[in-house]
Length: 134
Image (cartoon, rainbow, N blue to C red):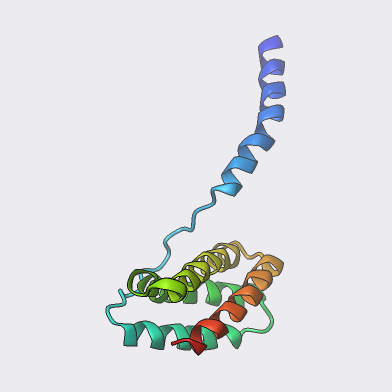
């Protein structure tokens, strides 16, 4: 009985630590395989089209969050192409966008409306700047 009580006590103390370390290293689940992007023209078209598609989502209910989650797979591929093929300031901006898109992906995947909205707001600012420099 003492061992059982000790086990529960230990779990009660370590569970929050384990939970916090898991959430800080959260990884997306691969639900969908988007086609590879093989040209700057394709990357640009996908980026612009998918950004516009995400902008059309206004309610951010469970259905729209799921749709955004799926859209981010293609968006991630186009941004990855930019990161690999651009240089200097444009590459740095693409790297920032990649991080924000990953945050949008994770939060929409987990149905977190407020956090998704926060990251989308940041994304749209970065995307507008990026598109103006294409």
